Structure formats: structure tokens, C-alpha cells
Image 1 (cartoon, rainbow, N blue to C red):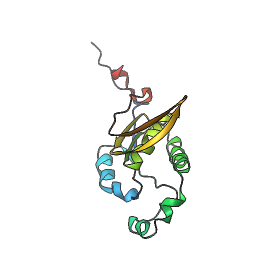
Image 2 (tube, helix red, strand yellow):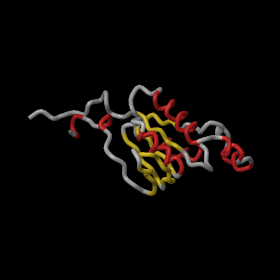
Image 3 (cartoon, rainbow, N blue to C red):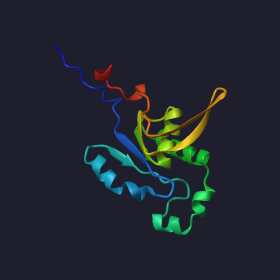
Image 4 (cartoon, rainbow, N blue to C red):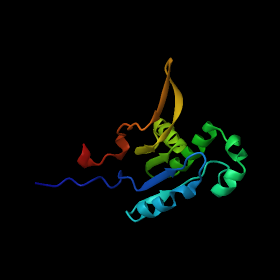
Length: 148
């Protein structure tokens, strides 16, 4: 009997870690080592204007007020779309809400939202409120031939 092997061309090789609103990419510093030790490439993109240390952000919160959600999602989408294959997207707090919005755009092969913030989106004629610690759906781009 032949053993099925995962389709290596579809297996995720990158994880994108999205920080919360009052944080910077530095909040993921120990997680970067964790995932890199497991053979994954790790990206921790900053929101537009958040290319500063967290202490500076807290001293000048105008940076937070200056950026919009659509602008931030578009920026993160650009980072993800530049990758050769869909990544795993993981976000904490507001980053969890952004993770859900990116997955709703069809980006990423899987997502994890940790203590996700809330967001609202229009679905047809209804307003759908999402958030909390909900588990997302399986996205086909991440499946190996073994999981089918």
C-alpha cells in the first residue's frame, strides 16, 4: 500500500503574526524564534506608522488615531499577497480582528485569532458582528493531499 505524502507545493511555509492595537511587532519576538525553530518563515508586519518601539507609541498615541482599519487591512494584504504561497495568519486582540478580515478576503491558508477584538461587516442586508474566541473555517489552499 502506498502512503500519501503532503503536497509540498501547497503546504504553508510562512506564518504572519499581527500585533494588537497598542503594541508593535516586538510583541511577537519570542514567537518568531518558536516558529522559525519549526522551519517556518515568520513575518511580523507593522501597521502603517507603527514602525516605532512600543514605548514611543504609548508616548505618542496620535499614531494610532491617524491610521484607519481599511488602510491597515490593505497594507497587511499587500504583505501577504507578495508571498509565493498563502501563509498561516495569526493575530492577537485587534490583530485577531484584522486576521479575520484578511481571511474574509481569501488571503491566507489558515488563521488564528487570539482574544480577538470585535469588528462589523456587511453580509448582504445584515450586519454581522464577529469577534471573541471563535474558530474559523477550513480554507482549501492549506490542505495537503492527506487531509482530503
